[in-house]
Length: 344
Image 1: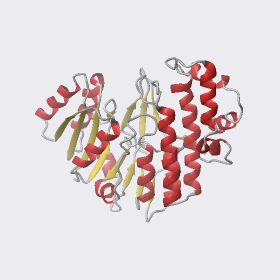
Image 2: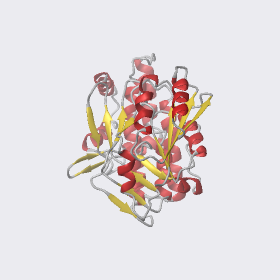
Image 3: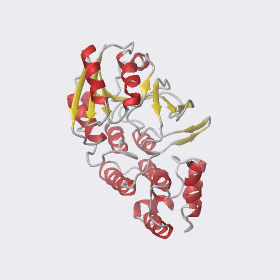
C-alpha cells in the first residue's frame, strides 16, 4: 500500500475531535501518516492530540501558535512523507473503509487529484449527500482542465439534479509529488473563511495532467453554527474580493479560459449572496441600515462583481442562483435582508 498523509488542522473542536481522529486511526487502510496540527487551540485539543500520539505511532503532533487554517495546512504539507496527501477538517469524520475504497479506484493512471463524494451533516441529525459529480471521470493529458477549474468555483445543473462545486480540499486526495513539484501551496494571508481553499484547487486543477472523480462518498462534513459559512465574518468582504482578484489574475496569466472565467463569475455571485447573510445583515453587524446599504452598493459596483452580475450565460449557476444574479442588478437591498433573516 502507498502511504497517505492525513493533515488535520485543529482549533477549538474539543467536542468533535475524538470522533474525527478515531475515524482515521481505525481506517481499514492502515498505511497512514496522521498529522495533527494543534493551531494554538485554547481548549483541551492539544492534550487529546498527545493522547493519540502516545497510543498510535502513525500519529505526529505539532503544537504551534495560532496562525490560521491556511498556515496549518501548509505546515502539514511540509511535514508530509506519504505518496498521497489529504486534508480532514477536525470536526468531520470518515467511514472506516473510506480510504480503502478510494484507493481501490486508483488505477495505473495514478491521478494528480482524486475527487471523492461526501455527506453534509447539518446541525442535529440531518444528513444528505453532497453531490458534486454526475458520473465518475478520468481525464488525462490535461483533458477537462478548463471545465474542472470552473467547477472548483461553481456548481452545475445536470439532468438528474444540481451538482455542487468541487472547491474544497477535504473531499480530495492529492499526489504529494505533484503538489511539491508544482509549488502549490495555500495563500497564508487568507487565514480562514469563505473560499480559502478555492485558490489552491483552482491552481491545482490548472496544473494537473491526470484527474479522477469517483461517486463514492465516505467523508462526512459537519456544518454547525461555528462553520465558516455561517458565523459572522466582518473581514469576509475584503477577503473574498482579494480571492476574486487573484483568481482573475491567475486565469489571465496562465490560461485565459472562458470556462474558468464563468466559474470566477459564479464564485462572485455565490459569495456576494453569502456575504449578505454573514456580514451585511448579520445580527452582530452594528452598522445602521443606511451605512449597510451604502457598503452593499459599493461592493456590487466593484469591477469583479459588476462583471459577474452583468455577465451573460453561466453554466455554473443554478436557475435559482441565476435569478439572484438578476436581482443583484436592482438597487433595492431589503429583499437581501429578508433572505438573511429567514436563513437564521
